[in-house]
Length: 349
Image 1 (spheres, helix red, strand yellow):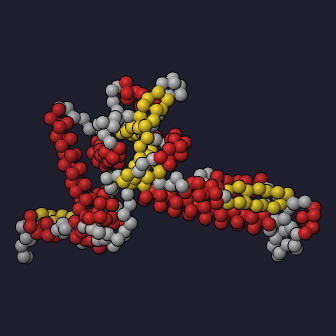
Image 2 (cartoon, rainbow, N blue to C red):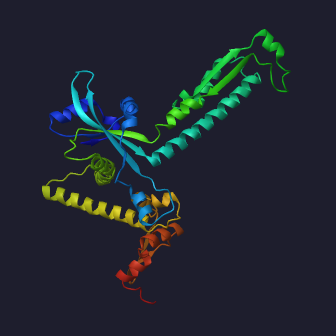
Image 3 (cartoon, helix red, strand yellow):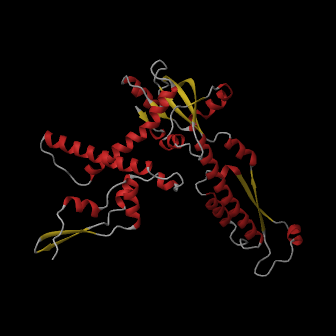
């Protein structure tokens, strides 16, 4: 059983054990953070053999783009279910991703800069006396600046009412401003930021698979490749969700499943061919183009069918620039070329 952190629990591992099954589960970092800190100095890291499709492509083409990788370290561990006190032996595989480290740090810095700008603006507004009669609104604005609250731990702030002596020392307010009655101060904690950065890029997987069956590198590859299987399955099941389909015989069920499998193979072949033929310097969204987006680009394309004395005449509509570029990258013929090969030419009048 392979699952993500949203379904992880010790009870889940115990149920699988009773069913004589093994588990490979992503675990919330908070559940193993203390274990990681205790074992960090003794962990023996090794580079994982697994690479994403994009990273394999960069290496095959000697790309100048960053070559990211994963590093793995495992620790024997025992987890206990709080409700029953029952324990289970497992392995915790710590994973370090060079790509995740960069992404997390970049996103955090972006949010911190935004919060700092908001707090600095609020500080100026309080100093200008704009919050004299609505001090309670300061907390609301700070909360709004913090957003989802994940960056709140790096900041502390305080709102202090000015004393009579402090009020007397205040300079004359500028035009459009009032004499402030309060002072707003905030501090950004660099030490906490460094502590957070020290754990960027780390995640963990818990498994009950014995070492004699699979080593941590093999287990990690299985875990990472699972999302490809799930994506394919979601595409396979998609057509069945369009409307109720009543299949009255096993032969019809079998026929539908094989039809969907053929469609799925075509779908992913188009996606893979497009990405393989995309130039190295093309935008990243081109390298991540999906089969769904490619097909959607042709959703408004039509063939014009006319009934004439000579019979049915089919004329292809003109391709847009985007549609023509997609066909060229896929090395597909245009609709006009396909029709000219399959249909008899229209006789001259």
